[in-house]
Image (cartoon, rainbow, N blue to C red; front, side, top):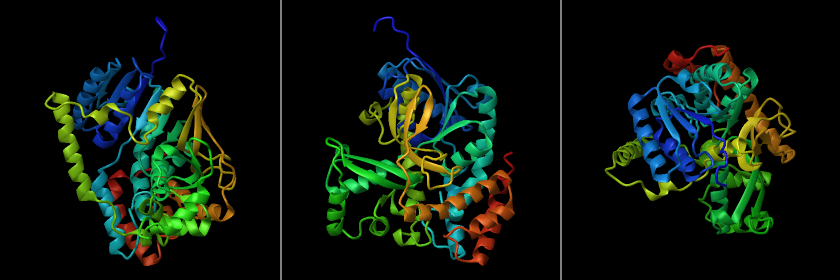
Length: 431
């Protein structure tokens, strides 16, 4: 409508130097007009990476005529003043430390998969990341207390749990794992992803699909999935399918991610993350961004289209414009969303977002056996958060010794000593 006043906001993106996630976020931001005219403030401690992403944002802003105000700064506190939404995607020396999280436990005989969200790797991601996240939370509480803090950093469940328990910051975690699970299911069903709707509840990277439905009709596709799965290639996501057979629901989001939480997770593969491939891809992406930002290459077509599975922009638009929007999955404090899991646990469930904020959608209790399986990991996550919040090596050892991935007390002590020294510069009390 001509002359209509449009709601605008200030979005602060901390960790904006992250090229991979940054591109995905920009795809969604510039593919919609819901946030046109708003201010986007990019923040990173790496000036070169920050300049690169700011240059790309300005090119995309001009190409799509969204008229956002693009700012960038290394001064986090200056950026946060007056923000309505804060997006976090930081990681501390990501690949180098993550690789140590994976290799050192294996050296001591621990069989695990990725070393990121569960097992000893999940513990040390928590120990080194939470102090920095709490610095952000204190600044948000002081400078923009009404802002929604949208977290993409791992370990998602532990970060959301810690902030919900120990701060007053409004926090939401987002992850595309539910869409990855849908992809696996669709390979078996032989259907396009747009034809299938899924809903799930559980923990981040350990949701269980309570519904698999035909998008056009709402018809239950679980019977068809069970029939087709029997004849599908047995080498396709075997650990997930073993749990599907045993517990009756399909777990998210892949063998390696979900396997981090299980003592037998290594049966889904012990190869770990492809660090070399990731480093190569990031260098390629940085070069491409530089070329696009300088005008040496045109904007790739897919950079002007919505991303696959990232939902931050949909959340922001839904809250800002009171859209009453359904968001397929988000990590929130439980508080009864899954009635048979602890109320102070961070769980992943569907959401509704509107001007009143983020509202978890309860799908009811999980089947009893699944809830009991998740209770084991719930205790690990709760204890790991307390270890990080209090910078306690004693509690960290306890968190390892109740983790089902750990099968040796000697290994637990040895890897704790070694990784604690490596991460000592980042470990400090949070409260």
